[in-house]
Amino acid sequence: MDDAFDSAMHGLADRRAAEADLASTVLRAVPVTGASVSTLGGILEKETISSTDPIAARVDELQFDLGEGPCWDVVAAGRPIFEPEIQTRPRHRWPAFIEAIQREPVGAIFAFPLSIGTLRIGALDLYHEGPAELSDEDARRAAAMATLISRYVMRRALRLAGEPDPSEHRHARRVVHQATGFVIAQLGLSPEDAYLLIQGQALAQGRTMNEIAHDIIDRRLSFTTDDGRIEEES
Amino acid sequence: MTKTSRQERLLEVFATLADTLVDDYDTVELLQMLVESCQELLDVSAVGLLLADADGNLEVMASTGEDSELVETIQLAAEDGPCIEAFRTTSVVHVPDIASAPERWRGFKAAALHSGFASAYGIPMRLREETIGSLNLLRTEPGELNRLDLRTAQALADVATIGILHERALRASDLTRRQLQLALNSRVTIEQAKGVLAHTHDISPEEAFGLLRTHARSHSLPLGVVAERVVHRELIF
Image 1 (tube, rainbow over the protein chains, first blue to last red):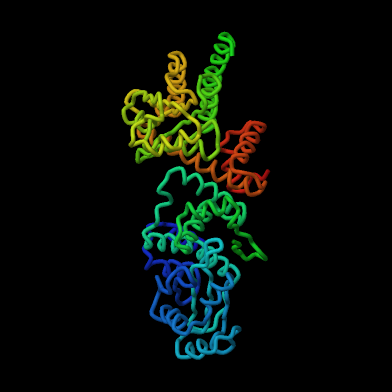
Image 2: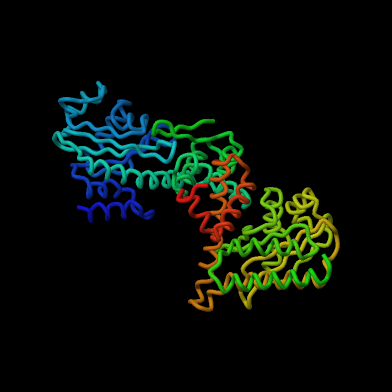
């Protein structure tokens, strides 16, 4: 099992991994029936970019169409959601989604947010055919995999957006690296994620990384964690 | 500086450089010391040192000041100015009067004049067939640098080049690029560490650089190592 998790983590960390394989890689390490990876929540289009089977894709599709469900809530809250008995004893109120899911062979749903710092970019949805609990260990694994998938999904989004050049001007790169340092200190992120956050912020606001970086260094934009959640102040 | 004390100082600088090279050393710290020695010993106002990345773009690795105006002037000299020319032609490029520099260098010209510089030199950093970057000397006076100063600058640039490439002789030759990339990466880490300290101490990135160096010195640690620990939050000060 550890080997399966390690190899899944390794696969998800690979920048050249095929996006279609993301969900099946997760399935190798967590005992659920199916999984899907989707982008949603503001800066990225609603889209399922990987799913293990038609049911997993259907769970996402229903939530997209109905505008409610676990994937929306995890993106809003930045915390995972566990629904071990979604058909009979749902813990959350999603009237339309709960009704629709009755017609699908889905007994349990576990959703994890995809995010880079303050940027919420999507969800990792896991489902089980019957009612099921996710052990603490499996939840930790799924969350760890969601972290790697977040980076993959952010890079994919940047690539699709034509990856705006970090800077047309080389001196500007220094500013971006300095701003990365500010974000590291503010959010306790790794340099890699802090840089991705600035890139994603630029994409979200349709501005250059250089502009975002200047805002950070001149203290016009800062990021703070509040109660474990990450907020953005401008 | 009197002639004797200058010679003594020069000797000291070369001795320190030699000491650095036989030990385990930090490239950025070495280059930083080099530009500061140039500024102290030569009749120049500011000095920058640039290394080329894999695509042949020059990046500022060390400068006598960290303020953005100076760094930008040096960077512009590396895009369209004496530094890139020195790098490409592998010979010394002299700009005795920046105001009448070629029009294609207008970015560099504007920034240099704005910062009060009147003349500049680009000196290639070369070891045999390998050119890895260039040294940029900026002066507030127009005209030529005296011959001895120019010779000293070239010698210092040569020592730095050997310092950066010195492992090459010990290992495979394709390591040159990786050595260079390592140095360039450590500059990125230093910028990140400046950001971390600027935020935690609520100071400017320039002041943060001073803090970083002071800490490295007082704990006898290479600058790159301190920066690495700061950005990974293993070291908090």
